[in-house]
Every structure is written in structure tokens, then in C-alpha cells.
Image (tube, rainbow over all chains, first blue to last red; front, side):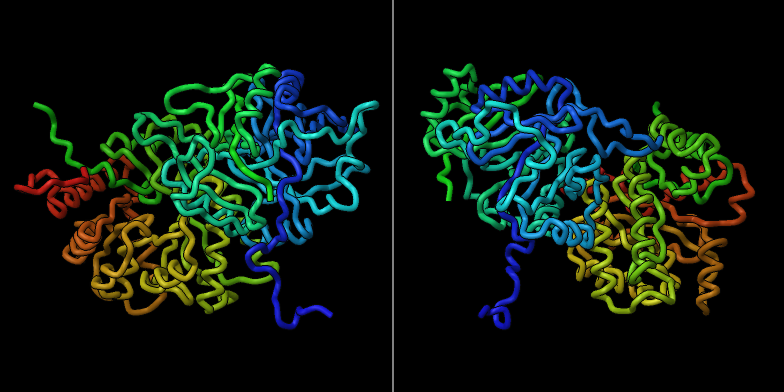
Length: 299
Length: 297
């Protein structure tokens, strides 16, 4: 017996969002980014069957490094760029959310005004639905993460490698920082609320050592998006909108920082931002790739 | 002594007032002294060298794009018609984004197939606003005076409020206000931050009796502000909006068959006189107000 007659679908979590399946970077220097990810505790696990794409993993976190050149990039003249070509500086090109029903989540997003992103699928590969996100990025929906994984289909495992390497110091997904244009906080808050059920946190509730902007909490309570507007004090503020960095949650920031330093990572130590119990920020590498650590105990 | 230019940076022309090619229109508007221009989709699609070249010409002109027009008969449809209009909207949004325009103008539907349910209308406009959102575009929704179900700015405002999307606001056109004789006092109930575009135009007679006459007058006999018979009401609209705290752009939405037979430079000069009339005689921007700081320039 269920209580469906009395309790309607979970309106606070309309997609049944259940965390992040993977985060994807695009770069034309996949090995350099791979080295950086390895310094952060990730291990290369698998290769894509048809493209220059690698899967890195630690603990529950999957990172995809995509160096594939899209032959159809901006095929239509006059079209605004809605897909990424890998550049030397790695950029966060996609977030993949775990949802109850990917097909349903995708339909619901389109019904509400999301842009469908064209599938980039070869034969015998999974057609993972995605919509356009901020800038040239995409948001994927995946529902097969319990019984089997999407990587079993599209990737071949690298032989002799442990497919489930433990997370360094318990690192786990915490969130993504998104840079937005001036006066765009309301817009992007509405975007993530309408399409995914994210809600804004009160201004006094902040995490880590970079508390600017607005923080949105996922309906599964396990993932955060932080929206950062341009600094109004700067005359010619950069208005570009993009996914700027990933933040990892960790119970003991100082222990994690010590371990990461041993592996060659350097951290920002300035009067404004420096390593402390609340969090830390790695120094930018490869033209600006940085990672944030945030004191956080996973649920 | 420097030449007096007036303070009209927030007032612009619309390409629909001018004959000739897009480069001719851009040159005429700039030469007359304007810093912005409202463009229509046909300016791009009809350009001899194609859309990309048109976008480049606009960018090279240095003129700011006030907005892009116009998406018609969009809201209140269902099934295939809805899906078809979503495709049209996406195409308009992509051109709008390519131009760097921050506003897409949407006119209320005239379609007999459109629903009269304001909540349905609001839902569709909310979806359109969501499509526009990642591109940084705001949707200005205007009540056409011959719209089937939404034909006054008060109706359009109701829909905007119901939809409650951050990047969906009102497009306000003085022509339609005069045509339907909507009370100017209703302007005071608007939220100035949710007015995304104000279009100004007048015409030469007092009464427009039928819907057909509205359409004919709107499409062939509009004149610039200060040239028609509603100058006092037009001034009142602008002053009410100013008092309300509206700080966005004013664009001259003047369709006129006679202006199509005149050199673009001559028409642009008429528009510039209208802009000076608005900026100086109506809003009195060059006159310092003792003991009062003005935040707008």
C-alpha cells in the first residue's frame, strides 16, 4: 500500500534530484589537466570508446576531461556559440545531475523553457539528454547510477586500475561557483529554481572562505551553486558568465590542505583569502583552474 | 563654444521609420546625433550580405541596440502551434543575442487560435522568459491596441505580474495608449523596474474608432513626439514615467509611409528634434533644479 492518494509528488524536489553524477572539463591539454586532477587526489579510470575523453574518479566524484574537437562547431554562420571547442585553458563545460527519471526531467525542463542541447552520440553509446546552461556549458540528466553506471557503456576501463579509488581526506562534491553578469542574480536564481528546484539561502548562511554573492541549495540538500556578480567597484568589470570553479566539501580542511600540499598543490594565502578551518582555495593553474575546499560534513 | 547637444542618451530611433538599407539607416541615425537604435528582425534577414554581415555592421556602427523586434502572436497557443512559435521565438532570441541586444519586444497576440486565459498567457510568457534568460535577454511584453485578448498596457501588466519572471517586463507604447484611451493615471501602478522598454509615437487625429482604423493608423500614419495632436498627453506619459522612477530607454516607434519617401537623413533630423523636445522642453534636463540632486543624466 502506498499513500499516493494523500501525498502528491515531492514538489520541493520535482526532478528527484540526487546529487552530481559528473562534472566535465573541456581542454585541448587533457594531460596537463589530468596531472592537476591527480594532484587533487583523482585517478584516471576509463577512456571513452569513440572520443578523446577520460574519466577521473575519487570516492563518489567523477570528473570527465573532454578534449574532443566537435566537427560541427558553429556550423551555421551568424549563430551564437552554444558549444565549446576545447581550449588550452580548461573550462567547466558540463554538470551532470542524478535524477529520478532523466527522460522526464529533460521533458519537464524543455516544457519550462530550457534549450535542448544537441546530442553528441555515436552508435551503441548512451544518449544522455542535456540542456544549455550558463555560457557554453551544458547540464546533463542521468538516472542510471544505482543498478549500473553510464561509464560501463561509453567507456572502457583502464586495465589494472582500481575503479573505485578512495577519496583523499574524504573529499566530496560541495558545489560549483558561477560567475554572472551585473544585475543577473535574480535571473539565475530563477533559472535554477524553475528548472531544478534550487532555493536561495539566507544571506547570513555561507560556507568556506569566499562568501560573496548568492548561494543556492539543491533540493536534495547536497549540492550548492554560488552566483558571483562582477565587482561594481571595478570600472570595466568582466561581465562574462561561466562556471568558474568546483568546490569540494571536506570534514577537516587543514588535514586535506596538508595532504594536497604534499602532492604539489599550492594554496592562496593572502590577507583576504587564506587557508583556515572554514575552507581554502588552490592557486590558479593552467591559466586559471582553481579548486575550493569547504568545511562540510556529508549527510 | 561647444555645440549644444542636449541630454538624450536614453532616447533612440527605430529602423522602421527609415527607408533604405541597414547601413544607410545606421549612418543616418548616428549622423543625426543618436547613440542607440531599435532594430527589427528584417533588418538582419534582409541584409544583402546576410545576417552575420548585418550584425557586424550594427556592431561597427557603435550604436547601442535598444532592443530587437518583434515576436508576434506567440502566447496562448497549444499543440503544434505552440511548438512552432517556440521555434520562431528561439530564432529571434538567437539573432537578438548575436546583436548584443538586451531586450526582445513581444506584442500581444492577435490570433483567433489564442487562449483568452491570462494564466495560460502568463505561463507561455514565463517559458519565453526562461528561454531568453541564459542569453541575458529581457522580454518586453506590449499590449497591441488590436490584440485579441490583451490590448491595453494594464492588461499586459496584469499578465507580467501573473508570470512573475525576473526578465519579463512591460513594453509600453504611447500609440496604443492613445488609441484605446487608457487612463494615464494607470501608469502610476506600474513598477518602474519592470518596464523594459518605452516606445513613443503620436498621430495626427484625435479619434480612432475601429480596430481596422487602429491598425492602419499604427502602420502608416504615426509621427514623432511633438509632431502630432497628443503632445500634451505624450508629455504627461513621459513625466509620469520619470516621476515613477523609470530609468530605461525611450524609443521612437514611428511607422509612417511619408517618411518612407524621404531621405533617411531628413527623417532622422526630425527625430532628433523630437528627442530634444522630450529631453529639454518636457523633461527639462538641462535646467538645474536648485537644491535637488538629479541622479539621472
